[in-house]
Image (cartoon, rainbow, N blue to C red):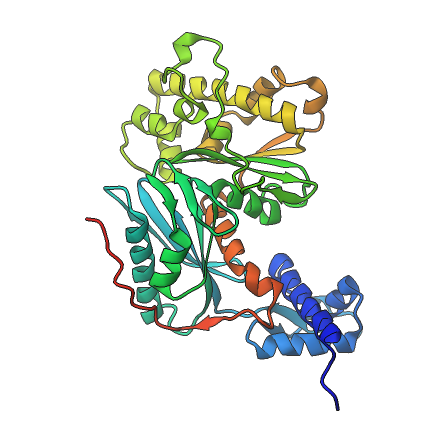
Amino acid sequence: MTDPSPAAEGVRQRNLARLLRLVHLEGPLSRATLTETTGLNRSTIADLVAELAGAGLVEERAPDPSRRVGRPSPVVAVAPGVFAVAVNPEVDALTIAAVGLDRTIALRERIELDHLLSPEEAAALIADRIGAWRAGQLRDARIVAVGLAVPGLVRASDGLVRNAPHLHWTDAPVRDLVTGATGLPSVLGNDASLGALAEHLYGAARGIDHVVYLNGGASGIGGGLIVHGMPVAGAGGYAGEFGQNRPGIASEADRRANGGVLEDEVSRSRLLEAVGLTAADEPTLAEALAASADPAVASELARQRGILSTALANAVNVLNPSVVVLGGFLATLAEHDLDGLTAAVGTQAMPANMEGLDIRVASLAEDRLLIGAAEAAFERLLADPGGAAVVVGAPPQTTGLPTRA
């Protein structure tokens, strides 16, 4: 028998990718559902599933007895133990997680920092945690890649961090540093753009084709755009920097930073200061704001919400989204009075652009950036499950990277 033609092999690889992506995005699906969804015949589906199972990427389970009608159809699910490592470096902490191909977060650590990490130190810290996990909970895991959600401008072509101003990273080859330190392929993206992707695929904007996403973090405000169901990155990958826009402030009494940009006025650090905290994760800050009876805290919340409403109205006028999603401390600001924030946006936006608009908080909450980073890390495997390497418990390469005290 002759080998299959390159064209036939290409079709097979695309079908393998299609099946793996379906169970990754949708969760466990019966063979019958896969047959109906793809239009492939049952024997082809069985053959493709067997190949993916042989590669350790999916597993078959017995059908649910309560839903059994007629001939039972096995259920195909992502195999446990296939992971990406997702990382979000920030000015006050580095968060790192092991995210399964089924989107479960098996491990998560928030490492509090008392100084700004250099790119080299971040790479070494990531490698250290992966090494510890491989010696423990992830001893038998298959680790695909590392995905980083970086609060700054990331060049799409090569993962170079052009400017992460709050981290003081400029033209930093972070992708190469992390790959060298860990021995794993690495993928970088802007944190807000990856948050937008995660919320679009799995969260508050799932199934919505026109989305504006704004993320509020320790390093400021970033954004992501979904247009016609596709992420919009811009020519260099830098689209969505809402935090760098000049805010419209009606009263000079509400201005805190002379000549400042949006993220100077609508600021997590100002909220922390208002409640007397120096550092906190998102739930802790939200709880502190909700528990405070201090009029100064209420005043700061109202001031920031007013400026945010103008910024959102401008975005609505320019982009005409169906949904605006707010993540991080911006979600905290919104949840204080979501209807009131929507009304404030409506008084400043064009009435036609407000028709059908829904402002929502990020439903993936603290996981949104990690899930987005993992999604980027999984992309090579999802696009070519037959050709993409899956590293199984391999030790990291030793590079002798310097660290900064």
